[in-house]
Amino acid sequence: MIKDKNILKAVETYYSGKIKEYGVSAKGVDWNSETSQELRFDQLLKVVQSSNDFSLLDYGCGYGALLNYLKNKVSSFNYIGYDISEEMLLKANEQNAAKQEIKWVNSLNEQTCDYSIASGIFNVMVDQKEEIWKHYVEDILIDMNERSNKGFSFNMLTKYSDKEYMRDYLYYGDPAFYFDFCKTNFSKYVALLHDYPLYEFTIIVKKEG
Image (cartoon, rainbow, N blue to C red; front, side):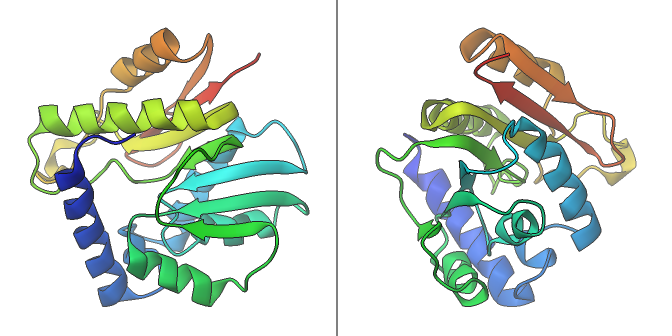
């Protein structure tokens, strides 16, 4: 479980403000465009080893953009969208009619899925010191690992971003550190993707080869 409730509250306030300001759009979840958002999804979904009939936890689901993207790619799957922002979940419910395979939650108990995916939830440090934020990120990765039966994936802004575009309030992770963290703590089967045209990287963790 996530230990720092103050950070959770700050994150909730930040993203609820974004969705209120920009509505259901890439900017509403603090991304630049729908095109880059879909490119991220393509990388993250490389963790999924089944073409159909799998379960997925969208960890920080926002308004459900990943769900909408999956619907055009996969015919049969079970989906849990988790977000701590009630505003985000309200928009998600408005966008996606309730179906048996879809569930929206703002807290997690003992739920597990085949796969968990986190897109963009580690980028904005909400006025936290970098070392504190780093511990927060590690707590979430531990939680994702425990909830994922077959694997999980996440992305993060990279420390190799062009200096002139970097911002003080954003967290730029060290891809080598997170590769090692996942390899050491979670699985022998870890991939680092840093070969697509965005200022970020994606980590794929599979429980089996």
